Image (cartoon, rainbow, N blue to C red):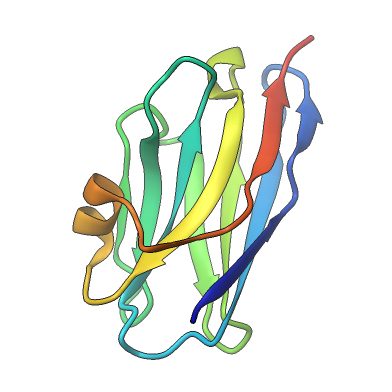
Length: 125
């Protein structure tokens, strides 16, 4: 089955930047999209951004539009999330996930079947 490993989280000041990476293995063409989700304490999980593996089309949550950019390197089976202008409300555990047959918008809307272990992002001064 698919294995996903995230990296790149950490502590950053408001207004700062971080780049998250998610490396996938055993990643067949059945998995049309891959994306980033986050969950803060006491809050529901949110689909942040998801991207099509084939054409690069992407979905962004309104809360991150204009600040976050998702990209993928199909040669490395890796997806990235560049996060700029970070705010304290971006603090959460960030997970990458994928599911068979789902494009980026439905993936971000419903969640994945396979998940990484998560990486903590803390935005604080």
